[in-house]
Image 1 (cartoon, rainbow, N blue to C red):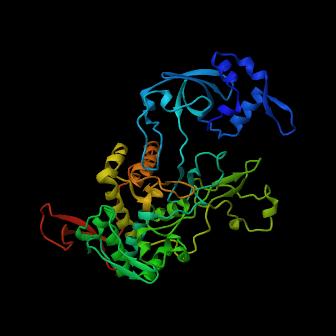
Image 2: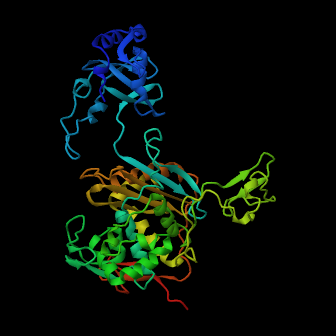
Image 3: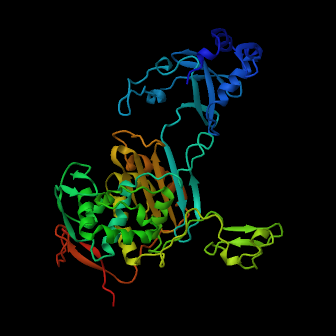
Length: 492
């Protein structure tokens, strides 16, 4: 935003030589009562129209030279910022995918009167740019549903829209683990193969001919389900759902807390065409982290009155309730049984009777997601964590409108969504692995430090059987073309 025309050139000239007294003079601008304002009032109004961030300083550019700018900050101090090659990122955006030449000095990126943001890093200030994209972040304890971290957007003063709970972007490929778990829960094995080959669907629900493709544009032939999920192969996911049956899949998916009415009624369900909030996604991923058992997400662990009496304590919170619960502090609860008081749940309660899926199915899916996080570009990004006990899945919707990453340790899970509020594209070269995953890694690099390594023990009822990596069939061979796969033992 440029405010050069809101102030006279003389004001900028005087400020550029350090004359702050000019701020006390009258400006040509009038207030709503028709009274002339002082210059400082006009400038203050300009700052107040902009977004205020604790991490940044707002400033008005009052003079520019190639190697430095002079600016007036929002505390009405005049300061100087010198050029750095670190600012070569500030290319002019032409379209979402194209940019102008690399700037060489301040003349290439700023004008007198520009409102700028300076990131505070200790005593230093660095020219920064507020992003157009927004992000949502939520971290929880999978075993209890306790919410440990929550970020609904960049800044509350910019927008009080809560993107963790109130935004419902398409889930994209981050939804695929639930499709595969539905298959494993209905008799499929991770070593079963499906042919990754071109196919055309004529689906009445889709109202057109559909020619789905893999992101790479390639076809890989027969693929084991494990490998297909690790590589997030679209066509195998679609064919798997078609074999499984949409209604069968929907019935199974409802056990994760997904409303059946909001699950796509066609094969696009396999690619994450349904829309869910980050809060709903993290609750569903918690089933994998917590041995198949789901928990409602809650904010408040306990409430203590002025006398130290516990008014409320969540039954799954870590400290046991050793004293008698009191509701004296909340007299409006007096006619309500204490065990019915359940304040501050993030989402409607899970309705499925069991609140869980087969622990073996959860472990099998989790084990595949661990491998997915150790290989390729994901593995290179998570290597810094040096943890063998984490798992997760990226997601990127068409045109990079939404990018996701949901990942977890046994005791900690987190979901990241990055996109725009108007669901416009983030650009051709943006993906869940390049945008959302690094945020998750930054968080986990601190949050995992004190968490013990999960021994990754399989639940009862799972066998390890050697299979051929190409065919998925059981084998006695011990060469590099075979590996041990997890199989669910039949119920006794």
